Every structure is written in C-alpha cells, then in structure tokens.
Image: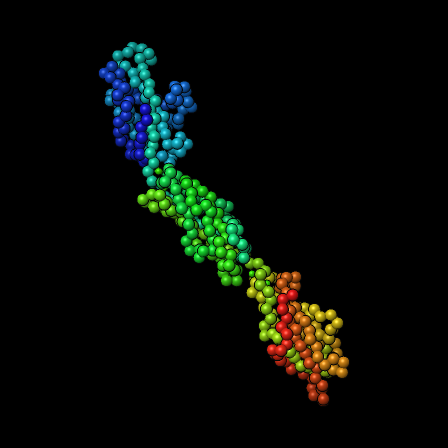
Length: 353
Ligand SMILES: [Ca+2]
Ligand SMILES: [Ca+2]
Ligand SMILES: [Ca+2]
Ligand SMILES: [Ca+2]
C-alpha cells in the first residue's frame, strides 16, 4: 500500500491507511518494524531506523501517525519514499511467530515549496581581461558559482538573471532545476574598458518562475577588469618646431617633447627615441623626452633639421607613435645663442608605426 504525506508534517498527525483494514477482532497491530522488504518480499538493506521511527502505529486501531517531523528535502537519498514494515499479530496465539502477518507500507512524502533559491556563497569575485571578446567566461576566484533549490520539479525550477551589470555579461545556463553551476560570459565587449572602469559590481538572481510564491535568492558579484596594453602613446601639443642659433652649445636644451598613454603601469609609461639614421646632432633623453644638442651645428651645411621621434610604452618594447619635430638653424650675427620654439601646423604629425 502507498500513502502520501505532505512535507513538512507535524508530528502526531494521523495517517488513515489501509493497515486498519487488515485488522479484524482477532488481530492486533503491534507496531512498525525496522526491516524493509521489497514488494517481492526479499530482504532489502534496512532503512535508517531513525527514518522508520518517524512513524508510529496505534496497536489497537492500526492508525499510523507521524511521530517526528518529515522533511522531503532531508530524504533525498531515499527519494522521499519510506518503506515501513507493519506487523500484526493475533493476540490469542500462543506461538506468536506462527500467527503474525506483515505488510509493507510505502509512504511517499509529497513536496511543498518550502525552500527558497540559494547561492552557495553570499558574494563572488572574478576577473577578466579588458576587450575580451563575446562569450569569453569570467574567471571566478572561488571556483564555481553554484545555486540550489532542492524542492521537487516546479518548486525547484529557477531562472537565473543578472541585475545591475548594464548588459556587460550573460549567464549560462539561464534555467536550473534543483542545482546548477552558473557561468558568466561576456555579452558586450565594448563596455570592458579598463580606462573607463576598473570593476563591475552587480547581483546574480535565481527566481522560481513556475511557482505562485516566486521565491528568489541573490548573490553579489564583483568582476575586476585586467588592463591590457591597448592604448598608444599620444603626443601632446604636436607638431613641434624650433629655431636655434648655430652657436648653440652641446647639451643645450632644444625642446621638451611630451607624449602620454592612458594605460596603467608599464603599459602607460612612455619612453622617447630618435629613430632617424644619419642625424647625430641631437639626442633625446629616453625617460623625459627632452631634446638637446649633441654635436656642433653648422648652418652653412644644414639650415633645417627634421627628426623622427618615437614615443613607446611598455619599457620601450610596446606600442609606438612617432612625431617629426622640425628645427631651423639661425645665423648668430653677434647675438647670444638661444632657442626659439614654435608649434607649426604645417609640420607633419607622425602617425602610428
Ligand atoms: Ca523552492
Ligand atoms: Ca520541499
Ligand atoms: Ca588598457
Ligand atoms: Ca599603452
């Protein structure tokens, strides 16, 4: 015989079962047995006696009752189904072992929606490279993001959504039954710019969508963006043009060049290099961009110079951008040596190499 009982039931509630129908005036029900039998009658491994003891039976009426609280979600290893052996014995028998009978009572514990969706952790942290393409998964520091609702079928069926991520990520899967491991993937790569934001905070939400209660659970997620060297040095105030007198001394400052780079750390530190071959009249300090005279100038030979200077990030090994500062050599005519600096729009601005 099979009985159904709603979980969680309160101890003492009567189950009117067919055990009573087995009884007549000559038989007494003496209680539940701890031994389980298959429907065919062969011995099974015993259910935990503690489980069988959740039931009691009235010895005179045969009415089974619940002796302890029954929670289906605590009985998943037996699929929410008890197998209770009930024994009856005729009280007038001298040899009670020959005058008894047994029946196996199956008790199915029916589910109620008494669990709310829950994530394994209250918060998660993750990381991802900026500019990662669509569908790339976020690396989660804690391993997997796991969500649970152990209620049965619709009561444990969840929709997984994002709240507050501004459309940057997607979730996979979008629906879970009972338990699931949630992956976060890139949905909109254009918003993964370290120079715009270094981290994104949002919530993951698991919501029952097949129950009237619509229970839901949330967890907090912070995804840190990892900078990449995606920005190139940019020249400030280019193009450059200077005029200097031919008697300028070695080490005289000619012009201060400046390029900036928005990346962080070494990706954003700029070094300067003169890349022309055959022009050895000037030097640039790698770390500052200051151009100085390195060889005596001779106006009779050359009255104009154009250098090509590169700004490079990542210790001089990364992205490059060049400019071409120009210089005119002026006759001294008895004046003191000095430098005149101009910004000329006609001077070509170097492009990316
Ligand atoms: Ca539930
Ligand atoms: Ca339940
Ligand atoms: Ca960057
Ligand atoms: Ca850079």
